[in-house]
Image 1 (cartoon, rainbow, N blue to C red):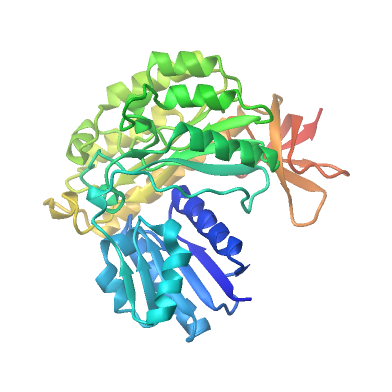
Image 2: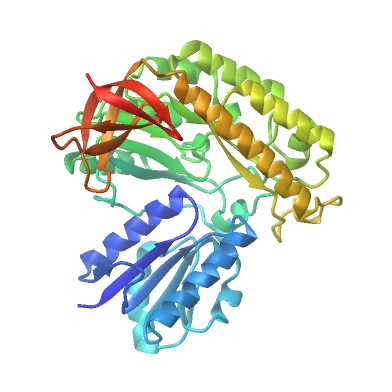
Length: 434
């Protein structure tokens, strides 16, 4: 039996796609093994959001070749889409597949094995109009499953390469989404995370059908056995009164939203080609907090964007501080070839970017600790996911995505528990079962 190993770089969409590719191989009789093992085939799902993603992708290719010089190395994903010729020059690479036709990977491998010539299977992604079906029935986690419902992005933020690697928006059919969720629920999964490149655009490209993300969520909510529906990152402009009022009536929808920000400075937001101001963003945050009890809001922040003055950074810092997020992800701006921002004047020196990143991360840590501390003494329902290193401690998450650890003499994996929060430790809470 031939063995195949997988490595995923980047986002949750990539993780979903790797799981789907793994199932394709296993259904054809291949055996999955850890990436650090010697395998007959290595599949590396790449990321190109930053130059660091490119570098890590190349490193993993070289690591696989060093582990087994005779192995077939297949490189897929965003970096493969944007730079196939560059990847083809790396020693050991046999196949390159971009962000389309990955559901044909086993058939393409069989074609390669007949010809033994380096295969580059990368087409013009901007011309692709159909959603590529890739299904999963089981995943590595046993309680939470990511489900890709949408592909592509039409936003073209000035710093982002993803619209050029993923192409225009394409929505998955509601029938196939519902079918996959029912399969996952039947296999024991209690929480589904709806993910995609730009989730809020779901349905806008589906002809002859009036459906959007809100309609889809309502349909999913009716599935018996499903306990939770979680959303991946959404744009502030997607948050409307209609959306919030609908969610308020759907208890399975988790009270946690990753509301993309990037900067709290209007001048910077405009140069980023974001579609909102900080005032609009604040309005959406206040609307969510007014309507949904215990809602948690997380976000992404870029510091050191070209032309970001000290005043711009301080404005952004104060705005984020006032928003009181439960967690923020901070990234120093990284110029990406092919984007408008890479050509902008007044690029910020690395030392200044690193200083601003450190300041923003410290603020994020303070806000996270404060958010967790506010829930001490409260009772929350927790989906318990894993046992901690074989001990009697178990770990899970609340609806608003607080990490909780609890002690139990009996197994708790994949169960819903009422837990009282006792104390805060680092980035999690310790609780007691009620």
